[in-house]
Structure formats: C-alpha cells, structure tokens
Length: 449
Image (spheres, helix red, strand yellow):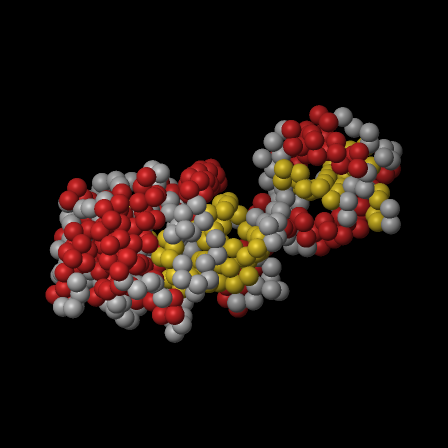
C-alpha cells in the first residue's frame, strides 16, 4: 500500500482519484489547499504526489517548488494533472521538476498505472532517509526537536523521555487524533534486519497490538500503531505521565504493602495477557510504569518476542537477572518465564537488591541460571514470611513448580484488601532517568557464552 497526496480544486477530479486509489489498496490524502502540500506530505509520510497544475490564485509550479525546497519532500515523485494537454505545456511541467504528466480527462486505469510506477521508484529512498537520519541525530544530540522536525510516519517527535537497550522512547504528537503519544523506536539495522524483515516486524507488532487492544486492561499500556521509517521500527503507545518502577527502586526498598499492590497489578496484567495467548518475555522494573495519578501499567508486551524472532538462532532477547533459567538453556519463553521475571521484580522491590548478582555479564548469567537467590526475609527480617515465600516460589528453577500469574494474583489479593491503597505521592521526589538504571539493559544475549 502506498500513501498518495492529491491536490486539486475540482471536487469531481478529487472524487475520481480518491476512489481509484482507494479501491486498489492505496491510501489517498486529499486536499484542495496547495499551501498545505509540504506539511501534509511530511505528516502523512506520503510516497507520491498528484498535483493539479492550474488552480485559482495558485500555480501548481509554485507548489512543486515548495515541495522540492524542503529536504523531506525534495525527492517525492510528482504527477502533474492538467486540462491543457498540449505538448508545450507538458514539456514545461516536466522541465520544471514534475516526474510525470497526465492530461485531463483521463481514465482511472491510466492514473493508477502512472501513480504505481512513481511509487515504485527507488530514487526517493536514500535521500529522504539521509535527511531524516540527519535530523534525528541532530535532535538527539542537541535536544532541539523544534527546529529540526523529526517524524516517524505521521507522528512528530517532541522530546526524548527514555532510553533502553533497543532504542529511544520519545514523547510524540499524533496530528490525526490530536493527542500526545509515546513512541518507542527499534533500530532494525542493529539486528541485521532488512526491508523485508522490517515489514514482518511491523506486521507482528500490529498483531500483538491488536490482540492487546481487544481486552484494554487498566494495567497494560495500550498499543496504538506500529511502522518502519528510515530503517527504524517504531511502536506508538499510550503516554503514561510518570516514572518507571526502576526509577523508584533504584536506591530504596519499598514497604511490604507497596510490594503487594505492585505485584497484584503486574500479576493481573500478566494473567490477562496469558489468558489471551500473549507472553511478555521481558518482565523487569523498567517495563512497569507508574503514573503520577496512581496507575500501575506494564508496557512492551510482545516487543521482545518480535525482536527475538528477527535475531539469530543462538541469541535470545531479555534482561540479564530477569531471564528465566530455562530460556538461558535454549527453551522457549512461556508464561512461567513471565512469572519468574515478576518474582525478580518483586525481589528487587522488597529488598532493594537484585535477586542475581555478578560483576560481569558471564557471572550474572551464571547466577541467573542457578536461580538460587537468598530468600528476601533473610535480607529484610520484617518482611512477611508469606510474601517472601511467594517471591521465592516464583523464581523456582523448575518452571512447572512456579505458581501461575492467576495464582500469584490470588495470593496477593487478600493482603491487598487489608493493606493501604497504592499511594502515588511516593513518586514526588522520584525523577525519570534517561538510561535504564540497571547494570545491563534489555539486549540480545549470545547464548554461546
């Protein structure tokens, strides 16, 4: 499918062009205002422009000049439409910079053929990607997203709000729905992913997002969209104003009732996902978001599996210290693996220490593989025995011995009913950090180590 910007002042022509393109699977963006050409072309990341040469008080040549003057639209293929079909006018249009010329009236099949040929041209790709990459790098370096406008599809990046093992997280603006969103990037080239795999990446992300959207859980960050732009995959999500759980537990223990409420919310999210056939595969403090209004939400469902599916056979995706031992041995990550990750998360919350330690990655992986953490109650004697035992059972080396997410939810529901409610005021002095705050962030792990 291609996106095509159509600019014409004649309603009949617009209707014909829109119908022809839409019927054949293309996405037309229609306007009668030539002054919007550049902004719409960038906003909708169009693949081609169909432009009327003569419009009242405005020449198509002026619009073409404006498109060619902006780096992000300079190489867009442009089809001129004109009621003046003489050769002199056609030559003038082509010399001025149009890529093709079609006289009115025209038949739909000819219009479709010319548009599809323009969209297939490869000459647009590298220069637009180059300018986009240059703008992104400049904005990341200087923090100036205002003067160097950076777009991913239709979404305009506003600022960096986080960094992780796969890429950056941006606050972005959705001009279509007029709302702020969180946009997470995945640098596909880091994983040796080409254009064809990139399309599969997007398809899988959209499938995961659609599955999550069906049950719209209050403890799961909503996924709105996914795409690929300039070899950068991106996922568009609900924007949660707050901090990650990692920011909160970076240098502190949490009270037992806070651990219970956090565990209950995460367990509910995992239980619902597992019931719907979705496994998270990277449960860690950085993937739990805490809003300033009191919401507790798990993010990045399905992202780890999608990226791992593009990796080599001897690699797995995850965060050392939270990866279930069976996966380090090459087994598939199943729901019990998510429960293991949740156990490691609650261990960190309850003790202020990681469940598994190691000065270097091989040592950490060895500790992770052994799955024999010191019981939390030995580190923090005042912790309720039942909570300590539950956390230990969730990190059992044998996945069949671990409780399910539903069982964890049930075990935590009774204490939560008698404990104080989760109080977001604990976040007042907590500030989000750009890095993950962990010795090792989510990454592809070479299992041959």
